[in-house]
Amino acid sequence: MKKTVIKFGIFSSLLMAGGMLVNMHFADAIGYSLAMLAGYTVMVISFLMVFFGVRSYRDKMNDGVITFGQAFKVGSMIALMSCLVYVGTWLILYYNFMPDFFSKYGAYQVQQMKDAHATQADIDAAVKEMTHYVELYKNPFINAAMTFLEPLPVALVMSLLAALILKKKKKVESPVIA
Image (cartoon, rainbow, N blue to C red; front, side):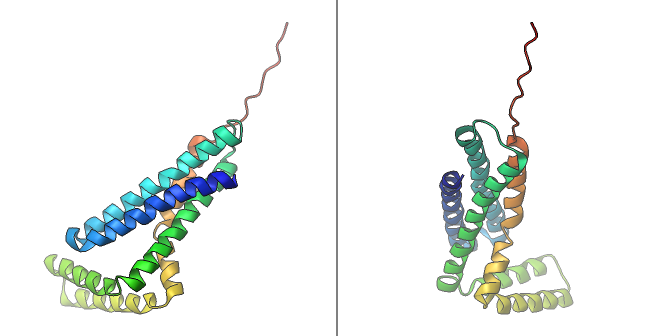
Protein backbone atom coordinates (compact mmCIF):
# COMPACT_ATOMS: atom_id res chain seq x y z
CA MET A 1 0.00 0.00 0.00
CA LYS A 2 2.83 2.37 0.91
CA LYS A 3 4.36 2.26 -2.59
CA THR A 4 1.01 3.01 -4.26
CA VAL A 5 0.22 5.86 -1.86
CA ILE A 6 3.64 7.45 -2.39
CA LYS A 7 3.53 7.08 -6.19
CA PHE A 8 0.04 8.50 -6.66
CA GLY A 9 0.50 10.99 -3.82
CA ILE A 10 3.48 12.43 -5.69
CA PHE A 11 1.51 12.65 -8.95
CA SER A 12 -1.37 14.36 -7.17
CA SER A 13 0.99 16.69 -5.30
CA LEU A 14 2.81 17.74 -8.46
CA LEU A 15 -0.50 18.57 -10.14
CA MET A 16 -1.68 20.47 -7.07
CA ALA A 17 1.52 22.49 -6.57
CA GLY A 18 1.99 23.18 -10.29
CA GLY A 19 -1.61 24.27 -10.66
CA MET A 20 -1.33 26.59 -7.67
CA LEU A 21 1.88 28.16 -8.96
CA VAL A 22 0.38 28.86 -12.38
CA ASN A 23 -2.95 30.00 -10.94
CA MET A 24 -1.44 32.41 -8.43
CA HIS A 25 0.88 33.84 -11.08
CA PHE A 26 -2.13 34.81 -13.21
CA ALA A 27 -4.62 35.62 -10.41
CA ASP A 28 -4.28 39.39 -10.80
CA ALA A 29 -4.70 39.17 -14.57
CA ILE A 30 -7.71 36.84 -14.64
CA GLY A 31 -9.42 38.09 -11.49
CA TYR A 32 -9.80 36.35 -8.17
CA SER A 33 -13.21 34.82 -8.93
CA LEU A 34 -11.89 33.04 -12.00
CA ALA A 35 -8.68 32.15 -10.15
CA MET A 36 -10.75 30.53 -7.39
CA LEU A 37 -12.70 28.51 -9.95
CA ALA A 38 -9.46 27.49 -11.64
CA GLY A 39 -7.98 26.56 -8.26
CA TYR A 40 -10.81 24.21 -7.35
CA THR A 41 -10.71 22.73 -10.86
CA VAL A 42 -7.02 21.98 -10.36
CA MET A 43 -7.86 20.37 -7.00
CA VAL A 44 -10.42 18.06 -8.59
CA ILE A 45 -8.00 17.12 -11.38
CA SER A 46 -5.25 16.53 -8.82
CA PHE A 47 -7.52 14.38 -6.68
CA LEU A 48 -8.32 12.17 -9.67
CA MET A 49 -5.04 10.53 -8.70
CA VAL A 50 -6.93 9.24 -5.66
CA PHE A 51 -9.20 7.25 -7.97
CA PHE A 52 -6.30 5.97 -10.08
CA GLY A 53 -4.27 5.12 -6.99
CA VAL A 54 -7.07 3.14 -5.34
CA ARG A 55 -7.75 1.31 -8.60
CA SER A 56 -4.06 0.51 -9.03
CA TYR A 57 -3.82 -0.81 -5.46
CA ARG A 58 -6.95 -2.91 -5.89
CA ASP A 59 -5.93 -4.41 -9.24
CA LYS A 60 -2.15 -4.78 -8.87
CA MET A 61 -1.53 -5.26 -5.16
CA ASN A 62 -4.75 -6.72 -3.83
CA ASP A 63 -5.78 -9.26 -6.51
CA GLY A 64 -8.69 -7.17 -7.75
CA VAL A 65 -10.40 -7.05 -4.36
CA ILE A 66 -10.79 -4.10 -1.99
CA THR A 67 -13.21 -3.20 0.76
CA PHE A 68 -14.72 0.24 1.13
CA GLY A 69 -12.55 0.85 4.21
CA GLN A 70 -9.32 -0.17 2.48
CA ALA A 71 -10.16 1.94 -0.56
CA PHE A 72 -11.00 4.95 1.58
CA LYS A 73 -7.77 4.53 3.55
CA VAL A 74 -5.61 4.41 0.41
CA GLY A 75 -7.49 7.33 -1.16
CA SER A 76 -7.33 9.43 1.99
CA MET A 77 -3.59 8.93 2.36
CA ILE A 78 -2.99 9.97 -1.26
CA ALA A 79 -5.21 13.01 -0.76
CA LEU A 80 -3.50 13.87 2.54
CA MET A 81 -0.11 13.98 0.81
CA SER A 82 -1.51 16.32 -1.81
CA CYS A 83 -3.17 18.55 0.81
CA LEU A 84 0.10 18.85 2.73
CA VAL A 85 1.97 19.82 -0.45
CA TYR A 86 -0.78 22.36 -1.16
CA VAL A 87 -0.21 23.91 2.27
CA GLY A 88 3.56 23.92 1.84
CA THR A 89 3.33 25.50 -1.59
CA TRP A 90 0.98 28.21 -0.28
CA LEU A 91 3.20 29.01 2.70
CA ILE A 92 6.25 29.40 0.46
CA LEU A 93 4.34 31.57 -2.00
CA TYR A 94 2.63 33.69 0.63
CA TYR A 95 5.58 34.42 2.90
CA ASN A 96 8.24 34.76 0.19
CA PHE A 97 6.54 36.05 -2.95
CA MET A 98 3.04 37.32 -2.12
CA PRO A 99 3.02 39.04 1.28
CA ASP A 100 0.60 41.59 -0.21
CA PHE A 101 -1.91 38.93 -1.31
CA PHE A 102 -4.59 39.90 1.20
CA SER A 103 -4.24 43.59 0.42
CA LYS A 104 -4.85 42.90 -3.26
CA TYR A 105 -7.60 40.39 -2.56
CA GLY A 106 -9.26 42.77 -0.10
CA ALA A 107 -9.22 45.59 -2.65
CA TYR A 108 -10.74 43.21 -5.20
CA GLN A 109 -13.50 42.20 -2.76
CA VAL A 110 -14.30 45.84 -1.96
CA GLN A 111 -14.52 46.66 -5.67
CA GLN A 112 -16.83 43.68 -6.22
CA MET A 113 -19.07 44.93 -3.43
CA LYS A 114 -19.09 48.46 -4.82
CA ASP A 115 -19.95 47.12 -8.28
CA ALA A 116 -22.84 45.21 -6.68
CA HIS A 117 -23.99 48.45 -4.99
CA ALA A 118 -23.42 47.17 -1.46
CA THR A 119 -24.02 49.58 1.38
CA GLN A 120 -21.07 51.31 2.99
CA ALA A 121 -21.87 49.47 6.23
CA ASP A 122 -21.54 46.12 4.44
CA ILE A 123 -18.28 47.21 2.82
CA ASP A 124 -16.92 48.39 6.18
CA ALA A 125 -17.87 45.06 7.77
CA ALA A 126 -16.10 43.17 4.98
CA VAL A 127 -12.97 45.30 5.38
CA LYS A 128 -13.01 44.67 9.13
CA GLU A 129 -13.32 40.91 8.55
CA MET A 130 -10.52 40.95 5.96
CA THR A 131 -8.29 42.86 8.40
CA HIS A 132 -8.99 40.16 10.99
CA TYR A 133 -7.92 37.43 8.53
CA VAL A 134 -4.75 39.34 7.61
CA GLU A 135 -3.78 39.28 11.28
CA LEU A 136 -4.64 35.58 11.62
CA TYR A 137 -2.61 34.63 8.54
CA LYS A 138 0.51 36.28 10.00
CA ASN A 139 0.75 33.27 12.32
CA PRO A 140 2.19 30.42 10.17
CA PHE A 141 0.39 27.72 12.18
CA ILE A 142 -3.02 29.34 11.74
CA ASN A 143 -2.15 30.09 8.11
CA ALA A 144 -1.28 26.42 7.54
CA ALA A 145 -4.42 25.17 9.31
CA MET A 146 -6.73 27.52 7.39
CA THR A 147 -5.02 26.64 4.10
CA PHE A 148 -5.34 22.91 4.84
CA LEU A 149 -9.10 23.35 5.16
CA GLU A 150 -9.39 24.58 1.54
CA PRO A 151 -8.67 21.30 -0.29
CA LEU A 152 -9.84 19.00 2.53
CA PRO A 153 -13.55 18.81 1.56
CA VAL A 154 -12.65 18.07 -2.06
CA ALA A 155 -10.13 15.45 -0.89
CA LEU A 156 -12.70 13.72 1.32
CA VAL A 157 -15.38 13.70 -1.38
CA MET A 158 -12.96 12.27 -3.95
CA SER A 159 -11.76 9.62 -1.47
CA LEU A 160 -15.35 8.63 -0.64
CA LEU A 161 -16.34 8.48 -4.31
CA ALA A 162 -13.30 6.40 -5.22
CA ALA A 163 -14.02 3.99 -2.34
CA LEU A 164 -17.70 3.67 -3.31
CA ILE A 165 -16.99 3.16 -7.00
CA LEU A 166 -13.98 0.87 -6.68
CA LYS A 167 -14.90 -1.40 -3.75
CA LYS A 168 -14.97 -4.95 -4.95
CA LYS A 169 -15.65 -8.10 -2.97
CA LYS A 170 -14.00 -11.40 -3.62
CA LYS A 171 -16.19 -13.61 -5.77
CA VAL A 172 -17.59 -16.51 -3.89
CA GLU A 173 -17.42 -19.61 -5.98
CA SER A 174 -20.57 -21.62 -5.90
CA PRO A 175 -20.23 -25.36 -5.46
CA VAL A 176 -20.70 -27.44 -8.58
CA ILE A 177 -23.62 -29.82 -8.24
CA ALA A 178 -23.24 -32.99 -10.25
